[in-house]
Length: 579
Figure (cartoon, rainbow, N blue to C red):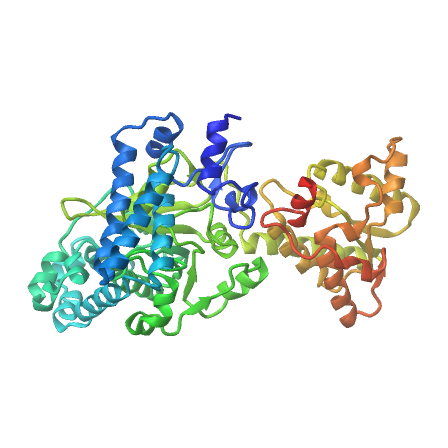
């Protein structure tokens, strides 16, 4: 691999091998980005990446660097009153700027993150833009609460309703479309939050705003996705969607929430993601708790604080009555999928689509050759003041298993277990190593299958479940554990057998092979999945004391506690392999 390419990731603190505690694993990134084998994702536009990798030190990179420096110096001038401190901070930022940009290898947004962090640390400022953000939110709230806006929003003519409506279904859909379009048109009216101009807006002013056109390749796709497209409305079946909404600027986030609440009324569930901390005027998760206006607007929403949320916990939250869910993306950058939290990456993987906001997010998601695991929409404003909706289809090779898909598979297995049990067969569930030894998954499946076949030949009237035979391309550890836990808690297991080292030795004897070093001394206690399954087995046994547990001693299952995200083995094994 090219050293400059590797250095690019290391210098930007984006290399997982070097910064494993902060940078998402390749498996976690694949929750969001479709990557070919050995392909690495970079969180910037193709133009920026090519300029850096090809060492094209032209105007593009230098201009972006200069814009970052100007924005930080503006913060200093605006927030620091003491001249001595101002001079010191200015000099410090310029020294650091010169150092970071010397080799022209730094992504501009990473440079911004570092300089912004220096400003916060040395100015002892929690959020230098808090007052401005609160003012923006206050302006937007006043506009949305004004009588002029409410009257304009609810005003409708017979021509609006009946021009394209021939049935009651079409009439209802047309009304939903009109409301949605009117809220969307507000996203392009920046005066609502950037100035006090909207305080004097009359009903006619809002009526004019509502006439704004929706343009872009994503208009029809978004309407179809939300089920409010008259052209494709051929039935009465409503298909509620689960949407991840990426919030952007303060002020406009009030418009976002108005749209989100409107979509809630139509039956959709929205997860809105904020920044994890201050970044200029970006809306962050602390604003949700400290800005009274934003706090009020999100009253009743479910706030996810856990950055390492498990799939099971996430499913329970999604199935709850919370129609709006708020979460941090885990970063203090404009959009960096390499640094987002485990929770965010899992949400990204599980929703039906992503709605991003603003030109910066659009640059990260659309001005790149990468495709994603979900359909991506972006809502931005053109220079002409029109609302532009862009659309990027998920990669055609993406395989997605919904919760319902996994539950159906689990129920199918349970039905088979129940049927065999009625025939008088003993149902055995076999838990063993599959993905816990890095690079040995194929061999693990082979060993398990060979040994289970041996058991079948030795035991009569026994139905043995071989988990390795139910794996399908696209399934990760999250999917498998979710599906198998449903099966395991069904109450139809008579014997739960955990793989012993003797099982592995016997399998290699049958294969007429010696036990390779990677497998010497291994048993189910080496597996993170089996450790979790032992916990489940002990819990199931409380309700079904007749169930037998066979295998290594229970107390030996304590060394493997948590998957590496997206992996089928303990994250700590990576570190041990490096030593």
